[in-house]
Image 1: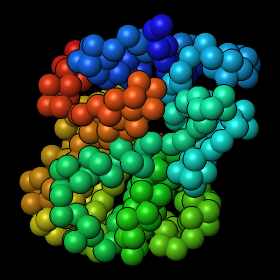
Image 2 (image 1 turned 45 degrees about the horizontal axis):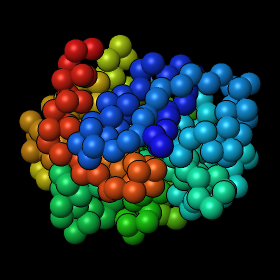
Image 3 (image 1 turned 120 degrees about the vertical axis):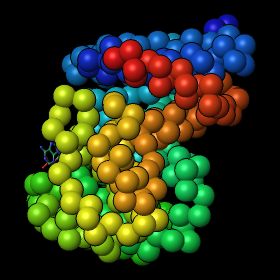
Length: 277
Ligand code: ATR
């Protein structure tokens, strides 16, 4: 019987997850499907009941359901509890499980692009305070990074994240970000700034130390102005596409029983799709 999986969101047409999972299904010749399903907020509980009943093996959850789905689950993983959002569901022993794989995806890609990052990163500067920032903070905390400075346009939101995580996460004013560039060994943009259709991220990199890792989770465009500027100053650029690809690995492994690999060919397919617009 075909193993059916999904990505639910509202809207969901923009999701590139079907390209990733569809690529792995074909590569491994599995009898499975991965469908985009638009689920409006008032239909979420009904859809989750169908998953629990066995209509699907599991799937991904995107905006606006990542927090709303939490009370509908039987078991919630540690990462999802820490981040406060779920992006992956699966059935196990008749129970519905949920977890968040964004932190794992962020770390896997960082390790791929900067394999020695743990030896050099004592202090990280994270820009933004949304769900992506929480995933990055969780990831950095699990790897024992000593200091994670969070700067967000709305200071209150940064304070909330810092309070929820505690040490090593601390909040600072958005205007402080330029001065923090010199003390950071890793800078992560988790805001939507720099994304196609958005203003660029205004960050003065004149004090960037060569070798500083600059990770932009934006992946449309692939090479943001931030990454280009960082590279010109001797920084190590890490793009956002790898996080998207790697966060998909644990879900696929749960649903289909095969741990897939993020190959250059799969990445190239996603890059081509992004370039097409
Ligand atoms: P996600 O869950 O994907 O991280 P989000 O919750 O919408 O998305 O968060 C978007 C982030 O981009 C926020 O940190 C937001 O700052 P605010 O909390 O102050 O809204 C940030 N952001 C969006 N537009 C911005 C802008 N023009 N200048 C600075 N930060 C901006």
